Figure 1 (cartoon, rainbow, N blue to C red):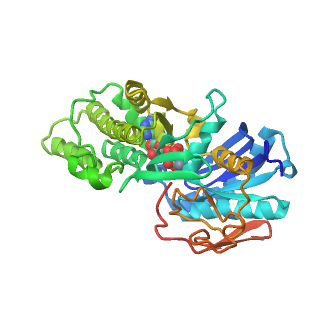
Figure 2 (figure 1 turned 90 degrees about the vertical axis):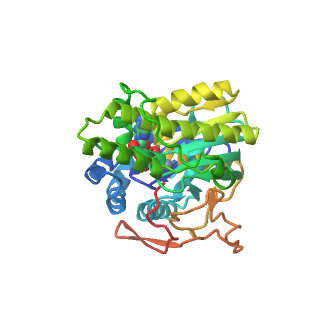
Figure 3 (figure 1 turned 180 degrees about the horizontal axis):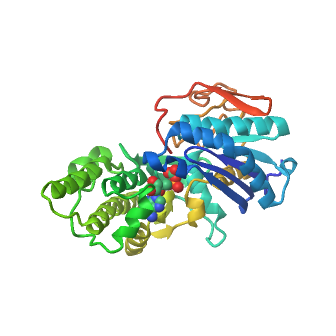
Length: 392
Ligand code: KG4
Ligand code: ZN
């Protein structure tokens, strides 16, 4: 295997995007994404079963498109990479089954990696950015996760400082959009209507930000109280027969989310004495979030890194990039003894590394998927961990 500039194909299916990415070392060759978002729109959120079926249908065309874009053949690959978790169990299983089938059929090494750490890994593919320095704080915000990480080393040392205790930030945008009668996905819609609103019109609550929360939840997030507060506010107006100032509500809600995200991320930078903050996840598309983060980071002497949006949303390139980093760092491939793990902890950057899991190290082979290829169809039977409906 080429360990200097490995050619890696990454498969990402943790939520509603079938992402296939191909990288050569730190160079991005292709990043194809097939999204089932439209199929979820009428339900107001991602439906796991629909997402899993869509992955199955999109997998082969997406792989072919990525190979075509990169101008390579499967035989050229040094390795295959896949998201093992966290994410929707059924959706993850499709990617894991496909990756195992590819790796076995091609006799290529397989790297099973962590989705959240993959979001951080996307940063190395940004051709315009200087190399990522460590340690760095990473704030990952999407429809499925909201997490604050302390990354001391991308391939060996990632610590979870905090995460959402209920809804993810993007999920809150989607739910509040519904309350305001706006379509799914709610983030871009709220952004649009908030442009003409006053962010100070209504003071909505900042979850887990009171002094009493600091002992146990300093870096955790909570958005469900905020969502309820918005719903109540709108309801009271409606009941009183008064018009709902949608733009002001959207702007004030967005301000509450942005404020709490940026405040906690910069507090982590200060407490851990880390003058670097990396943003990732689909909610980064939010202009106000990027502006407030840039403004406050600069005032705090923190360098802000925001990868291009195409690398911030869920994609396969970040999975390939993380695997390439593991390969360049000399890490062994994963065995086939891993599965879709919906609650994979962020400390497990790579799962089932050969020589580690074989020795029976605890907690590595969580939830075994037995993937087999039957008449060209990838079938997987699985035993996954708890929390199968959690999203990432
Ligand atoms: O990372 P992502 O593409 O994938 C999943 O979570 O699957 O993130 C999608 C989420 C959705 O919840 C969407 O509402 C949110 O990101 N989002 C935004 C914006 N654009 C997308 N949230 C706030 N402001 C935006 N402009
Ligand atoms: Zn994600």
